[in-house]
View 1 (cartoon, rainbow, N blue to C red):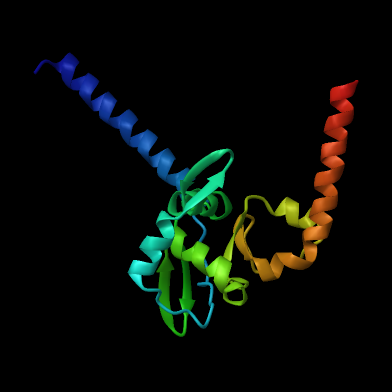
View 2: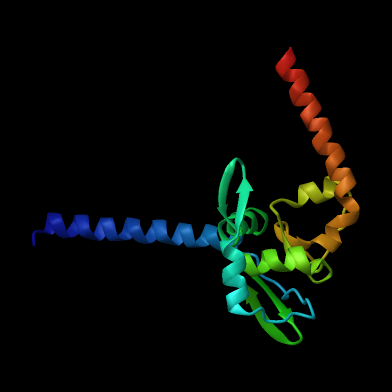
Length: 170
C-alpha cells in the first residue's frame, strides 16, 4: 500500500473516531439516570392476557390498529421509551406498552406513581410554578406529581392557541 493511501486510511479512521466520540458525548446527556422509581404493588400479568389485549382493535386518528401498536406509540410519545422501568417491592420491574395500557385502564391507583411523563425542559415546570428540586433539567414525572399543576399548563396552552388564532386571522 502506498504512503498516500495509508495516509488517507489513517485520516479517515481518525475522523470516524472523532465523530463517534462527539456522538457518544452528546448522547450521554440525553440519558436520564437517577434513583429508580418505586411503585409498590406490582404484579405480573399473565402473558396470554397481555397478548390477547394487545390484539384488540382501537381507532386512533381515523385508523383502526391493534391496541399493542397504539400503546407502543403512546408510551413512546409520553415516556421517550417503549418500556416502563420501576422498582416494586424491592424488585426491578420492566413492563411493555400493552401491559402499561392495561395498568393505566384497570389499575389507575397503581399507575399514579409511575414516572412516565418525560419533561424535556424544566423551563416548562418553572412556567407552571412546579417545584422540581432533586430532578434533572430533563426528567420524568408521575401523574401524581403533575396532577395539581395541569390547570396552569392548560391555561398556557389555551393562551398560546388564542395567540396562534389571532396571528392567523391578521
